[in-house]
Length: 436
Image 1 (cartoon, rainbow, N blue to C red):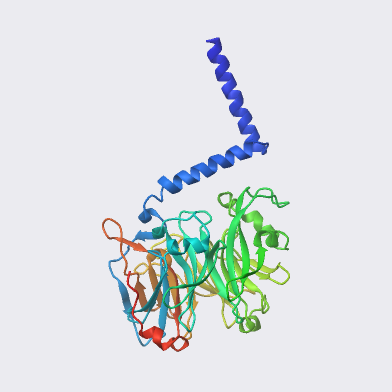
Image 2: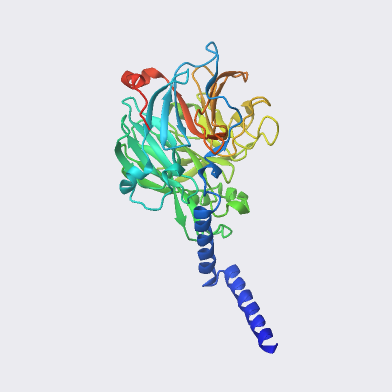
């Protein structure tokens, strides 16, 4: 009994000592904690909730059985072609207003793994194009992301019209890029960083941090800016105290970058030509960064939660997807808002209806069209919807792909954009979609 009591007391003492070391960050406590966290994350990745692609956030239960174009009011809709990316594979599709596929780009990440110079990536069914931009000659700029991985950004590629790789940037690019008039590419990347930033000792170590990288038109890295320190050293540093405990290991989660060109700068009072507008999800903030000085020159928090894709409009207002700002209800948790950045007053919004809810907890974007309508990507619903200023549905498209054991799962639409066909090579619009 004495020996058993002694061993129990010794075990308790070792446990308490280990807890003290871990809590006070005295070695080897932090190293043990990180090893445990890493092992747990690896286990979850291999055998946990991502053991099936249909349990990942690339697929959701389909709300409706409809496929393709489900509404098209020609008298209300903005004519054009629509480019979108789908969560079922690394692919982008160009469709007409009737939903007919005019052209597709497909390039599985596995086929460029040697170029990407990485072995730490998910299987192809977990890797998709997060963002894409088509050029007049048929080239396509894309971001690869891998769901269920950290970092989940895999890089940027430029493909030709036949989906052949022109160049690949292996930095951990994620979410979004923005192409400047001179062809330079402003892209978000992320990586693990393990240091302390006074006075923000509450941020976890190591943590996933975001960077702004400027690429040449040929994909060469020209500049790299650490966004966390840029915010921490600015007069908007107090925003870092608003990060929830759940996000201390990913304190910014930058999810949008928009280059401010001459036209936008002429209407937007808080940014100049050459600066960029950024969105930080975990601080519920948008900021303007000057790449030349690497300073945050403007920042704001407003009536939105978990926002994505802020756009500067010709009138100087900002249009954004407010993922949680509509709260829970029959019309969904999401809305699209247009607000005046000088007053933060919402001047327009679309929040869906009980019959056509707007509900996307993550991802999603929007685009103000030439006729005043707004094209909305409701990612979780695998849906694109064009609405008028009065909230009428002018055009709607549901991802036609289905999956799962019962065929009732729909892949996300990660991103979309309405394009003027006159800006693209006519041969591209007559081409046939590539085969699987």
